Length: 157
Image (cartoon, rainbow, N blue to C red; front, side):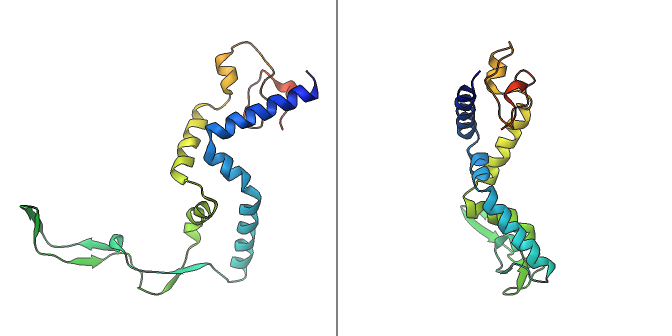
């Protein structure tokens, strides 16, 4: 197989992969920028600077107390709520534990869809789609995510 043929095959496989796993493709295309941001934040944190956000209480910050009953579409009973978030309104708190979600939103990545793709990739680990449908050895896939033993001559990208 010529280098040009291998290149065409790799490009077709990468295109198919991007169509099948769009969130991973988006993450892959933004990897360098994301890595730079992460390194900068790590550097800043080691020097005592942290990314923070001002806390505003939302519904999840409260736990309902009392008893309520719905009668004829109207909520009746004792109302009340206890603050359970443990944070003070208007105070700045570090957001390092939220960085994955923040960076995903910045790059337009849907984390739930990304996780579903991860699960599907885990089920398909070790064989590309071509290998699954063609049991005989072949040389059509040659990308990092495919670990089929039937085409080592193409090598990883």
